[in-house]
Length: 500
Image (cartoon, rainbow, N blue to C red; front, side, top):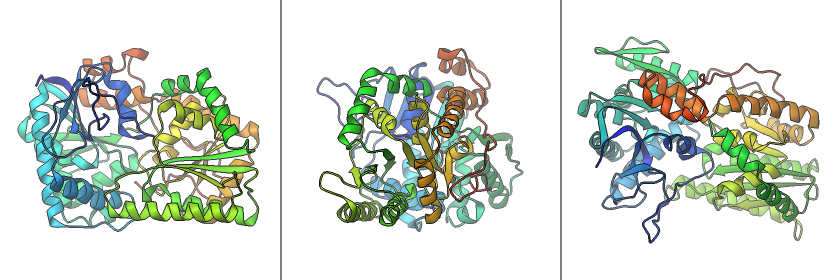
């Protein structure tokens, strides 16, 4: 295996599960998420992506994709059950999302988490060139920085957490809290979506490991680990160009006709996950239909809910509940040829997603807790007409950057209903003003701004940063949350509440 100056390490490789007969692979793109964030960057520099290919058994040999080398890490059935479905997604994921579901703890899960993280660290050590830069991604691999530093102390190691990082009183519940913190501290730079998450991390390091720490630096032996907020973004220009294409605009017009030309279209695009607030959103919409404040003839809800982690029991139960509620609402309020909710579970390609964004008069992004939520940013980027109202949860990381959205507390059912009504009936001039402000922010703070900010801190302004950001003339300033330009409507307060 050739060595690489930049190595991205993530749980999944960014490719389709199947390889074409000619051996070709394609990038696996989904609404939001890690692949959408990193794909535009890696085309500009020699890089290797280390991750799991999606199957069990020996690691397959894979071709390069868009010039990025793929190094697969093998997982067997026990690894998949105990590391991925177990410790990562039944212990850490719910805990990091305010314990919306009760985290579960099993000793064999922790043993698998250690085993798999060691395997990822060893694979990364094999492919990283001397003095290279390694960027480890997300909660599945929190031990990798520490393990990799033991194997390759010559590397510059970064770690970025895409999920929220919980307040100390939640994190302290973890039986293996000290080991997880030490693993993250193997990095030279630990990045989070929001400043409050970095503050939570510093507090825990001081409390659990008794290390001197501020919200910017932590002393570890003879090293200094830097921490900070680097809110992830999207390729704003790519989404805007896609949404402006004539064929996408034409597809949007056809979709609206297929929906019956309603006066208003509400759209939600989520992974099927209990953190996304899908059930709360459906209940709010159902009550608006029942009260007559919204009618099926005038308004339609399109709910895209792409299945996720289908082998995890909590997700199977959630899908059953959501589908049962959609059926109840359509049975009670729908008409022949006029369902109240169009419920779709298949993934969409980028052009179809852009067309859906252009159709939506209201984009309802109302997670109970989210690290960032790139769907909200994609919607804003796609509204090249400066139309469309973004209804956004206070507890999505994006709320700190997009205060012009119609912010709501998704835990407050009455507030959520009021938010939907406010967005549906908003003055078009107010909608356009808010959208222009959000679009301007995203054009200044796009995916290259995120990469430039993070990697310039990690690589200390090395050549890697200039290569990654060369397409727009160099690294752009770091993204910082903006103060609210107006008070929140829809019965809530802005999401600057001191939570991670």
